[in-house]
Image 1 (spheres, rainbow, N blue to C red):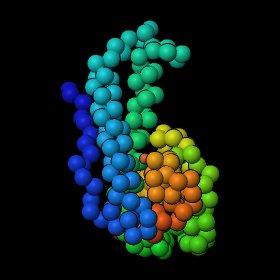
Image 2: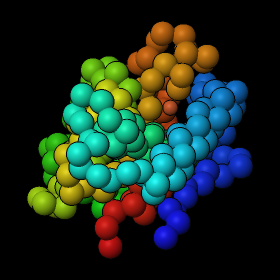
Image 3: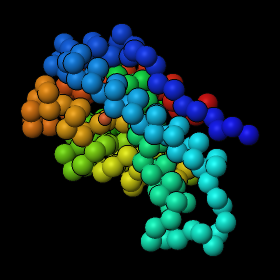
Image 4: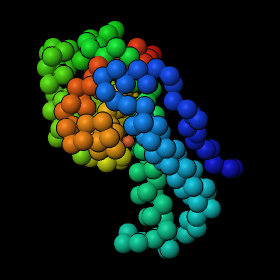
Length: 201
Ligand SMILES: [Fe+2]
């Protein structure tokens, strides 16, 4: 059976570029799209190699082996694909206060929306690469996670609802090292309808 491959759209949805009004430029998004495509290409490359890899357990090794290299880097590559997919799908809205069921879940988990905003901004300054809003199927609650890398720290059994990229490539061109300015601009562009659409039915 041939491995299923992932794809990235040739161009970003037009709505994403509405972020230019708050300072996140088209140039940033277009360069960023190239990085997303890179994660998709590596995901597909590793899927093909995993399809062909020798699964003889005597050849696997925790220090170095082909199996280890492929499995470890697969999580990074596919994580990068998924994280960017959610990032771009949930950009291009009016931002501000969350709407719908996501608003209810946030206020249930964080007391009120302003508290969640502070938590999200703080998490964004504390993380090295990502901030994730995940829906925990175990407890039917949302939770904000740090992702230092494409594949770090979120726990199992979640649906990823919102992903804010805080790697410097997401903002350096527009804000230099002023990450908080980027975070505040980003929060004016969240598409809460798209976030709600990711909730389990
Ligand atoms: Fe990125």
